[in-house]
Length: 417
Image 1 (cartoon, rainbow, N blue to C red):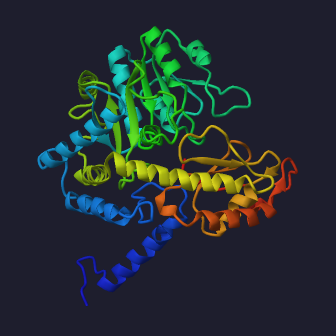
Image 2 (cartoon, rainbow, N blue to C red; image 1 turned 90 degrees about the vertical axis):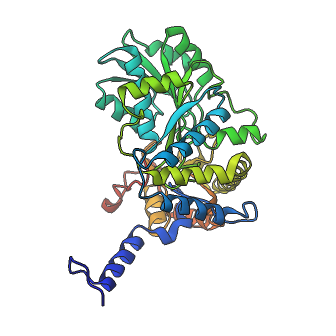
Image 3 (tube, rainbow, N blue to C red; image 1 turned 90 degrees about the horizontal axis):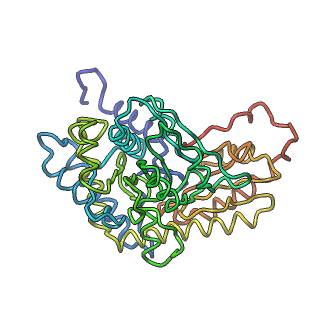
């Protein structure tokens, strides 16, 4: 029996690896309604799903030993192709950018670029309160004051452009808007915000982590021609983040930050040399996996994937609306659904769904808890079982304001943000 220098035997090593894989719940991925990773599976609508996923993983494996410095020639070519393709779809004539570790890093690099261009040591950033938590994090890291604009009363998914403009201060360096808000799936009024940014000479960044790899395809194929302009077609938009490891279907960690033009990327590289990224050494594996996914899917493949994800979402929404006491929050333009109730305390429901093996995101808004799901192709066939368990679990719900919540139910653990 093989024994390694540490004294660990091969059998013991494999047993521990198997245990850790089970703890990570990888074999249960079809029941994961809020995942980041390669989500493709073969279905009648996506007959090539498994094959594309495996080829993406193969590319990741073949480049896993590389980085973007000495051995990075191939990865840099792949990165440029991904950026050029997506940037073109998003309406940029000369897109420039890079593959990042995800939306948080993309948002950070965009606002660091804005700060550099403004020539300030401090300052403020204005964004709606539906903004991702990374916006607060980057403000703390970069000595910026977050000016958070509340949603209109009773409309958590909406943004008032006039309130955004009123929040601008003399020290404001940037505005951030979102395309595919957490957890509503809505798109901020970016055309109007873009006009405000131009009027005040401010940098406008769009966080499209969730929406960036689905909105263009839903619009272009005619699924939803009413999606408002949100990308580089809006003149004031300077940069857009979009996550490959979300609706881009690629293995994590992989996001993209696209600048409108090479001059903005050059400014990012000045403040974050040599690539514009927060990290210096970047693994080539995620870039290769993302490149493979983009190359093999292209616009036609991403359109099919987007339509499949939306079909699962629409099936889920229709089923939730048939369950007494439950509501679906309005405003979603993407494959994201927020399930809540105006009459029931859903904490026992959330706990029961966890106990039945479902993985999703729990959110404290609307209070006391709501359930967020983002169905993707790997959830094929799981909508009906999820709805059946949800219907059963609702029987455990308590009336809102009853004050009767068992001690073990005081805290609903979160999966996601």
